[in-house]
Image 1 (cartoon, rainbow, N blue to C red):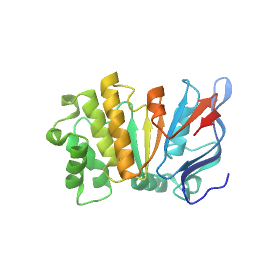
Image 2 (cartoon, helix red, strand yellow):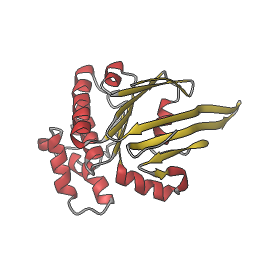
Image 3 (tube, rainbow, N blue to C red):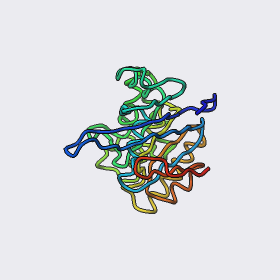
Image 4 (cartoon, helix red, strand yellow):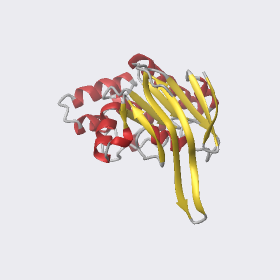
Length: 229
């Protein structure tokens, strides 16, 4: 696969295997994929098909058994864990099904956290601005247990976007939400993606959510079964 300047993320012959009590189990097998800058990509497939494993490898959260991931021109396998963490902090935002907000921090403090880790002195101002963008300007000082599920996911979106990431990875971002709230969060996710030109890669079981993406790839038994543009 040739990687051009428009490609912000790529996987080349990516595989992941683990050793279990019954021998070696291949979770991901020889996946090659390229994602263009500013694109939106849905990874779909049945449970156990390897889609969440693929997302974790593309995001640099895990190491492959074979193959390579290149993110913004940097091969992840050439970096140690500390260097990969620095790259993620600089380039990547994450949104998960279970929100992953810190319960002892307010909405504002949760969103400030990634900026504080970077040593930014505008953390509070940026957090307030992005929480305003997701409609939570009046909820800055509320704690996660004081927020609805939809509000918590909006805080998670604000935290993911607050540092202007080049890539956003989302794992079942509406999985814990009712249909109406999930639709509202989906609208917000794609609005932020569009307005900030952030490349979006998401895993979902929801065909309506996948259909909002410009491209969908289907996983089956650890391999890319088909791809549609």
